[in-house]
Image (cartoon, rainbow, N blue to C red; front, side, top):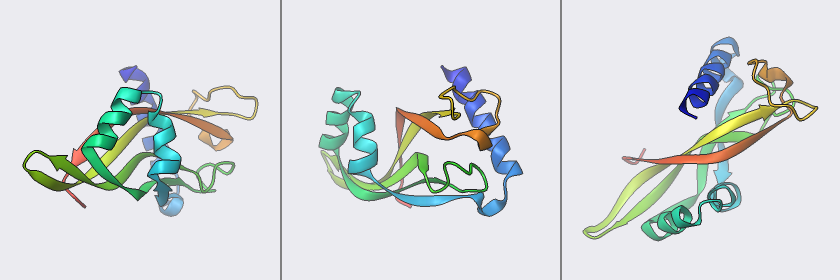
Length: 137
């Protein structure tokens, strides 16, 4: 699993180097509409997140441009960043909650793209991977 993540990260990093600088940018995303459906696959973790953090609905995800992937231009993908308040025993602490995902890209025939030729991607699937907690940005 970790090796696939590293390969995907390498492919995306390579694409970032080849694509024009404005091809990737942050775009807004809703926690309730975009992230919660993804974490519902792990109900215990969803419960922990929602009980432990007060999470702002507006966050940022990586926005795909038409230059990088013509068929997915405007779509958002992880990692996602949300401002949150950690409800701790010693009081509330402001944090940035980073939601990491595993991403698979698919071509028009529904086949997973493993060659790194992401310009032909017409869809992608994200699966919740992990959460990072950072100081507020």
